[in-house]
Length: 108
Length: 125
Image (cartoon, rainbow over the protein chains, first blue to last red):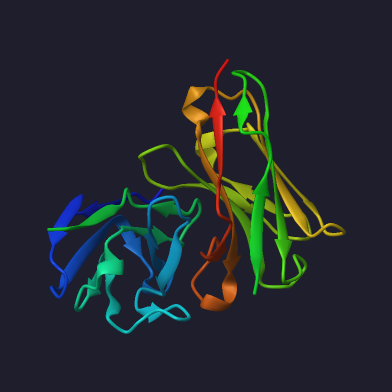
């Protein structure tokens, strides 16, 4: 199984700042097979990014994804109050699909 | 707008079988290129991929769950289901059903673009 490690575990920032979240895979993952999700308390995850860098329908352009091989990044250019949530990465390069443990983005 | 809704008991006794059903509305479960999956999240923890089923009945489940998982699909009701046998407290989690979309590229098992709201299942005597 491909293990995904997200860092940091918690990121404390202020609205308007830039957020950089990392997802590292235990083995190489096709860049077409890496997704990011946002999850708010009591809600289901919401797809943000697929194929490492493509925004899902309705996702603002302040969200961007990049990376290849074993290192992937989610960047939020200017944080809005509604962006504070938990972010999960998922690989779908190989079964079983696997998720990272999540990064909590909290208001500083 | 596609919607998914989980249903089933919220409390299951240890050693018994957890059963959940996901009802899909706003689209057909028999649409090609979509797989229908289950993901769970223990309280305060991360997401765990359980597996997927295709409308034809083809399934794949996470080996970590060994042979305890059974998937089924009922195309006449636009539903798919999960059974998890011999449950323990470690199976306590919010269980989500979701759609895996091959149109978004990549490889099977694909990523999930629509999710149900989740169903909390507690394993306790």
